[in-house]
Image 1: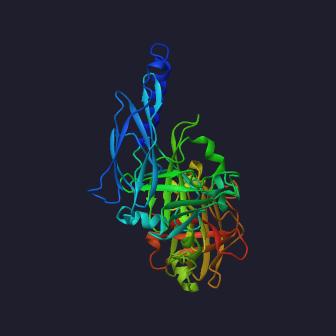
Image 2: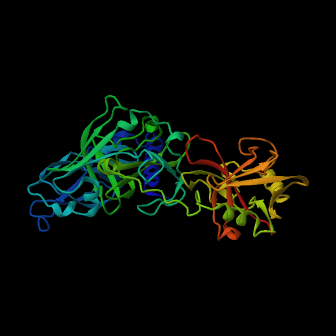
Image 3: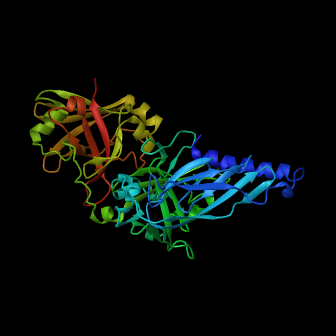
Length: 453
């Protein structure tokens, strides 16, 4: 299981020991102070930047708080990049309870910027002497669907190796306007400082320090927390200590917070973009399918629908493939049967489509159609308008053959709009017939027809 769950379990276990053992051992059996050792390795850093922390309290689990982060290791080596005084606090947990150590102070007399020159530090804060501002991803920057995603805690979720199991987008999240005004600025100007603007958290701390562990890909903040969606704050207990980073590059930051409320453990993944990236983001021009809004002559349309003069061709709805799509400016929502079903397709419609077809002919100069809808035959004539790519049936009938229910996904019309077509490749790609649902826009509810075998 992941590190945060282990640490959470460790403290739960410590709490149980405290409860079960206080009656038999008593707090008076505890040592008066916890002991620990702090060693500055001046042979490595003359300014005392490299520090070894050691828990010397027997039979204890120790927690060091060194201002930029915490550690529970018996012996751990940490690095301070900047000149300053750093209090070292230590707590030892024993069977009888917990004991505080006497706070020590590390004095660092010179900077060693080698400890903050990793590319991840630069990505987070812009580099030494720089600052960088981050905002929530609103789903409009080509990266994620919105400000928060979800990830399964039963699967290892690690830096650049994680799986998002639900990306709800902004409409399915509890997000306020105040949430989306939040900003957080990381800097390395004389030290690692974090400044936040939180209109969604009145009274919250707005400044503190932070530490980025490039080895464990975790972020620790002191006296301040990252920006978060207010509705989810009470659902988690750890917002500051060794929080997991899943993605960090020049444009994007994704931080995982473990949900710990009664809903059960789950990862909240908060999605951020750098403000500079957001301000300068320009979405790529949509790549239109070659078949969208084709430019066809009347003869090309007739040849595609019915074949050569004197021939006929039969078409059926692609019920078992990708039968339906919403096409907006040439870009569709669905790609296969699964996505069509997720969007609202129905098993009954697949059954209806399997026993239905429409046939076009062009015999003796006349244009006729035959519709077979589950054994019910209707006939008439049709005309073609190459200027609008429309095929008009007469008399009016159900032209988009699905179920005959007349629902919004089963429109009754006598006009078939050719939204997508490939006059030289119709045998494999078929035709998309659509009905516009938004005036003066290229937005179409479209149905996919393929050549019937």
